[in-house]
Length: 340
Image (cartoon, rainbow, N blue to C red; front, top):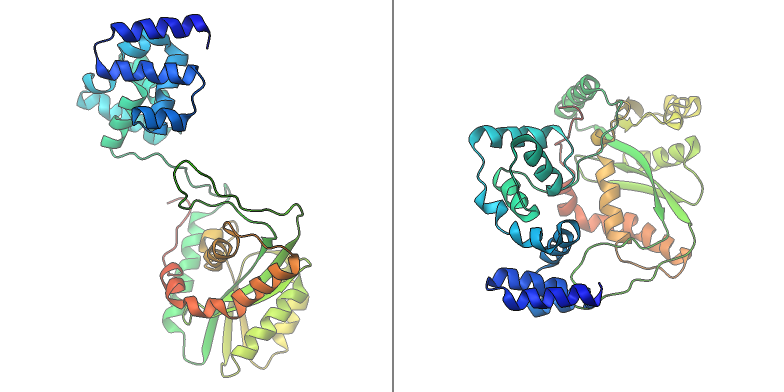
């Protein structure tokens, strides 16, 4: 910001009687003078969001409009028809900012709202600012419902000499994942990261009744042989069972001839059950992978790949058994259906 602009702002501040306007001008003066946001927050007792809204308004409209519209969000009231139109607009389109909603009202009804005023209005109307959920474009709603009907029937009729598992694989990269956590105000915490891209692939099975987890890790890619090795471990845990149902996704290796022949040659009957295509939302073990990655990778640094593998193997072999209460809450039978 130029010296001339700063001088104009200082003179305007001296003439301003409204305390809120004075604080707005001081915020812009401090920012234009090179103050950090932390310094501005401490001086004016305002938040990051308030600082951003003041700076954005000044950049876009200049100081006169910036002050002129200070109460727009509160003074302009919408009638019921206008509120309904606004609600329908936000429900129908991906509204990325309050400014976009402000533009809609201005163009549609000639109503002027500040960004902050619009934010408060949208909250009052029942909206919250969050990311949408990404869903596969080819997901079939009917197929998902049909699968769930079969799954619930299977669970209700499962006998004592039968078992059921969700089976899937996931990759765990040897690197820390930055996650939110409590840090002292005005300071930072550093977490070391690795420069390589090594990863461990974990092939796992989850029993939704006993909350039992069986997992096998390997450096190489998961294939039909990996599935056979996992199923062999499942059979070891279920020698007293007559039949085991294994729920797979539609990856090619899960339908391989080699795997089918292995199933046919076992004394225990193995029944594969396949998820609908493009339906990771129905694969219960996907929640387990998210849970495990949060526990193992969030803000955690492992100095060597060997150490990383040891911790990961211990997690699935030992630690996970101590977390059954957490898993029971997370791994419930409530599923999202894409398209509903």
